[in-house]
Image 1 (tube, rainbow, N blue to C red):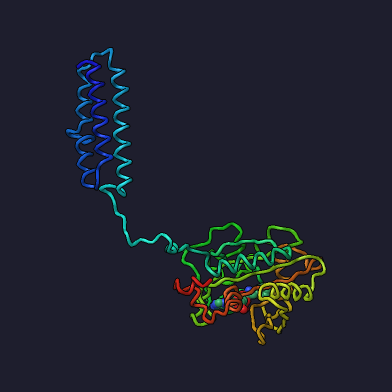
Image 2 (image 1 turned 90 degrees about the vertical axis):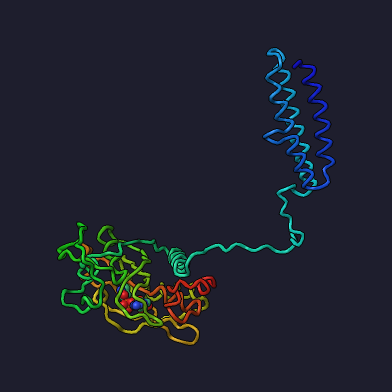
Length: 343
Ligand code: FA5
C-alpha cells in the first residue's frame, strides 16, 4: 500500500472513530465502538497496524509516526467518552452515596496502658535525674537472693514462691551459684547488677516484669511490673528517700500527695519500710523501700563506711490502677479491647 493511501485511510478512520466515541449515548454504545475501533481481535486499529507491513520500507518511519498519533487520538476520544458517561462499562457509581457524610475512621492500635505508665514513670523520675537501667528476667539465685542478703534458708527462696526453671544458668557472673535459674521475683536484682558494674554515685530506676506464683485476684497477678529505684552517694538519708517518693507521687497522681512510712522488713534494706501515699482521702500502699543494707554494699564491693543509699520498689500495675480508677488488675491483662481502648 502506498504511503498516501495509508495516511488518507488513517485520516478518514480517525474522524469517523472520534466522532463515534463522542456520539456514544450510553455505556453499551461506547463498548460497541471500543470493539469496532480499538478491539484486539478485529478492530480498525488492529487492521491498520497489519497494513503497515505492506508499506514501502523507506516510508515506514513516517507511517509509524502517524499510526502512533492515530492510536493516541482514538484512545483519548474513548477515555473522554468513558468519563463523560460516568466510567463506561466499569461504572459502579452508587447514586445513594453521599460524599459529604463523615467517613468510617479506621481503628489504629495504641500503646498498652502498662507501657504508657512505664513511659510516664520514666519521664517523671528522669526529671529528678534517675537514669533507666535494665536487667534480665531470667536470673540466677545470686542476683535474685544471695547478693540481696537473702540467705539459703530464707522462706523467700522457697520453690513454691518462685518460678524456678529446668535449665541451668550459663552466665559468668552467677557467683558461687548452684547453676539454678528462676524468673526474677523482684526488680531489686537490677540494683546488684548496676552496683557490681559501676562505682558510686548511682541514681537509677529500673522498670520491668517480675514473676511470682501468686493466685490472681483483684490486686495480684503472677506476672506484674515493678519500678525499682536506687540512689547511692555520700550522706544519703531516709529524708532524701521520702522527698523523692513524695515528689514522684505528687507528679504522678496529681495534687499534693503526702507519704507515710510504716516499719517493715526486707533483707536488703535496713531500716525497711512499707510506703503509703495519702490520696483520695485514703492511705494506700504502693511498695517497699529502705536504706541499702551494708551487707548488700559489701556483696558488690562498695565500702559501707563511705557511701549510703536508699532503694524502693513500687508496683507499676497498682500505680496505674490508682491513677486511672481500675479496680481489677486482671482487666489489664484480659486482652479485652473494650477495656484497653479507654486508655
Ligand atoms: C519487693 O518486691 C521489694 N523488692 C521492694 C523493695 C525494693 C523494698 C527496694 C526495699 C527496697 P514487695 O514484695 O512488697 O517488695 O512488692 C512490692 C510491690 O509490688 C507491692 O507493694 C505491690 O505494689 C507489688 N506487688 C507485689 N506482688 C504483686 C502481685 N502479685 N501482683 C501485682 N503487684 C504486686
